[in-house]
Amino acid sequence: MTEERRLIMLPGPTNVPDRVMRAMLKPIINHRGPEFEALHDSITDNLKYVFETKQDAFVLTTSGTGAVECAVSNIINPGDKVIVPVFGVFSQRLEEKIARRGGKPVEIPVNWGEAPTAEQIEQTVREEKNVKAVAVVYNETSTGVTVRDLPHIGMVTQENNVLLLVDAVSILGGDHLPVDNWNIDLCVAGSQKCLACPPGLGVISVSEKAWETIGKVTTRTYYFDLVSIRDYASRKETPFTPALPLFYALDEALKMIREEGLQTRFKRHEKCAKAFYGAFEALNLLPYPLLNVRSNTVISINVPSGVDGAKARQIMKERYKVEIAGGMGKIRELIFRIGCMGIVSEAETLVTIGALENALNDLNHKVKIGAGTEAARQIFH
Image (cartoon, rainbow, N blue to C red; front, side, top):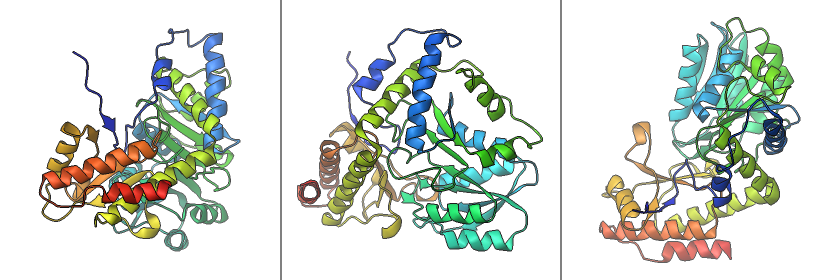
């Protein structure tokens, strides 16, 4: 029996182009041989293009969470102070990773649906003594909030000789993130979101400033040891067996990004996001985040009063073949989340809006069928 295919509009994993899926059918090769060296070169070059960095970039056989743990464990000694704005589930997890490593998180609490500011970071850096790093989730996947002040936060950390660690799991490749220009020392992401690749790989960029700290960490992690990863990378290898089919897929996905061009890709994501927000305004559905911090890659809206969000998502999935997500943590039942990432275009956007319109009407929350799709269409044309 053929598996039914649905439109995946989750905030990860996302739809993967057939070209990328076919790449995984390539023959298995020796990961200590010349074929892998060529693959390693291709991936590294294009990964630096996506990070917009001239510094080191590596691929890890792990999830995005593993990549974040790699970054944390390579710079934190027990007792190190790290400033962490907490404004959603993934920033909470980042704080917990630092604490488990033995670091001392200095939490900046921020209302969910809002974003931390450079002013808050700067004030905390001044008030606290001996801060080692600032750790920021650039795009909080649980709330659909993007930290638009990140370039200014990078200026604050640079001026105060503090490291900047950025979790960009749900935004790298979907919105502006020039790692070098924004003074980001460690930046991590996952393969399954804006890169439009299957799940299972993490990516990380590392600055020269970060290397100075990494060399002084007292207890080095084993699997995620960046010193070892860099040593093997100099030979165009990985320390441990890589997930070869996923490396082939990532290579193809990065080539597609380069062919499209980063700026063109960012504009495509931005236009689709505007279409979603315009459609929801036409349907009297309220976005969850504040206006100036709404994400272009994770669209979150409040579930209308009286509507069973889980039931609406079930109808969208089973009847209209479109899958979106609910909320996480304390807002689990309160919002819908839609992935606006990867290969998203006008077609996927309009189908998703139409499916939501119909699902709401099926639950007797009457909206004008076609009002959302028409508002979105006006933005595309």
